[in-house]
Picture 1 (cartoon, rainbow, N blue to C red):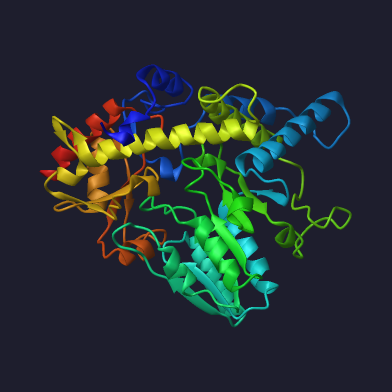
Picture 2 (cartoon, one colour; picture 1 turned 180 degrees about the vertical axis):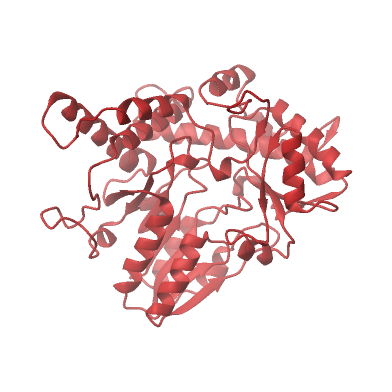
Length: 426
């Protein structure tokens, strides 16, 4: 019996799940397709989009005193609590909401290095440019050494020891992902944070969880991280919002704020009520998945944890199907004419993201051929500033990135594999 496939959603559950998302099987023009580019911006929850439109269309200001304004204020507070206590599972610290997660990365790395007493910054080759470039720019600006951990070419990730070997008592900042956005490899975040603090108790740790958030649980206080960020548009929600958890000491770093507000307040300007409403709908959705596995009296965080586990279990079943295929249909590992890159064998250490290379197709041509056949994927090309560093790290000439979602079915994977087998013969 295949253990990865044993815990997937049933056909009936998938039918219900798919009904809650826009464009699960057709695009905005009604054309049939498989959307395997969720790492670039996931399928959207219908309730999240509907509540965003309804709340955003209201002119009332949540900071005022009329009845609708007070209602909007309550929606914001509920959203803040869902972010802090449910998504992050945090009791202390502060929430930093702003326009994008990339903005958070650049702002926080700037502030941390400006106020640091150390002499070096540690990051990895796989980081998103908003993290890597901010670390490189600010370390150079402040005369710090930039230390960069290399990749594990087999797993597609960065080994914890490769990171920790670069940390010393003078490391001011450690910036690393929770999971790779090119391979899906999950970092050993808790071990990295724990062992780094043994080396230097004063180190500040930034974890970019943008790619991991739709697939796995975030737990900054358990991890021991100072900053953890995610973006709702990659987590079934709307664009234009980035969110971070800040530990108490980081939240009190000097930053832009109205002087009459608390020292650890990071909200500037009128609150984005509709975005907070979207967060609550995301949490509702995940908690409802968890409710089928746990008693009703469990806390909202516990239900959310159970829901995220069910999502991860289903996605690992899909990943196994993509790699190994079916008795009558080979998976990616067995299709001649292509190579699965960064193919870590332990699927419990991977999110649902894959990189493949075709023997006779450039990654951009392959993506175009996929679209002709109703599959949306994304090229990780050497010509892209978002991809070049990572692609080169794996000695690749460019990959096709495939990122389905828990919304997908075994039938979707079969259809995808048939198309892929055809492309491998071109």
